[in-house]
Length: 497
Image 1 (tube, rainbow, N blue to C red):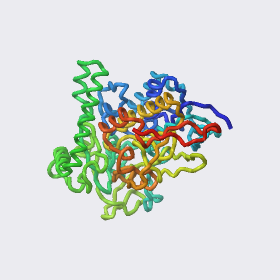
Image 2 (image 1 turned 90 degrees about the horizontal axis):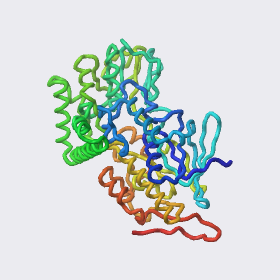
Image 3 (image 1 turned 45 degrees about the vertical axis):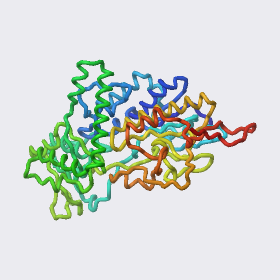
Image 4 (image 1 turned 45 degrees about the horizontal axis):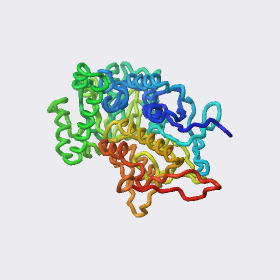
């Protein structure tokens, strides 16, 4: 069945997808494109998640786009502000007219004969077909349909309400109710102080602690620069200031984890006082940045604890009861509402099935190329951000690289680019060196990374700038070629440095 054809199809109209469209319009103005969005709105995560207090877990000067200054006073921004930022970017760039809403991408098949992707989408109206020369996946890293909830014994007996933050009920009234939030990650530490403002009491029930750092909601340096410099210059300077500080802190965590651990815990003691049991409730078993740190703006979590509106319990769940949760220690937490802030389900490429020349691709058997493409999969890139810094920093670089790649192929007359691993003996390593539960649960489904460039993930913005913005496209691993025809049936040319 024939469908619309575009030079590029972008999948996802969230933070990454809208950014990709902007880069494509600016750097490849002659390219036609469409954005296929499975939902009915722009925004991705920032439209889907509606739980109380939702906010960024990175500063907006690095999480914002490189091309659009973040001008709000809040560096740690609330969800609605971020959603407006994305929507305004789409509006100002006239991007929305390119979006096909309610088109969930189920399948993509590649033909080397034609150098074409055929993309199949599903919606309430049935199936639609699109074709393109290049497929750019900006669909995020987790399953949108549902989050991760472990099976809790006795949950069916609980007379109250159990909700997951990923699909927050609009009718949930928690005023003057007893609330238990299960979890200790970014979502939990956001929910607890927000719900504590009106709930009778909120308990954060965690199996193990997370490193939590308080920082001001606003950025004093950014505010000072904005008063004295043009917005774009002030934004650029603040962005680089925060990038460099973040890189320094991450490297310090790797080189001197005990020193950083002591620094973080000292901050918690200053917030909660010398008598609080920091060892039990705020001292993780792992080193800083083995998992993401949690940021709390202006000490809001600690303030809720100090004021008695919230508390932290570190224990494991034995069973739900009719009125709450019984813990392994024998203690029972009474609750009217239980929020399972227990994480996400990682899902590569939005769960899309992929075939290349009739061969179904098992991405767990591929190597990741430069953090964005996959071995033996032509003309497909994926925007995947950093685990140790703002997501958008890497996505911006990925978008620029894709545009360079498209322009290079046009200039040389190529229609196909395919990463090829020519070192059969190169050791394969996990795609993400991260101990978080949502990563560990998904490792067997994720691609691998290699032991050396361009198959090695840096997780380092400065190194990625050198590789993606200035590095040679002809790197010996990327194979370029025109589609095979009856007149010229030959192997694609491999370009070396």
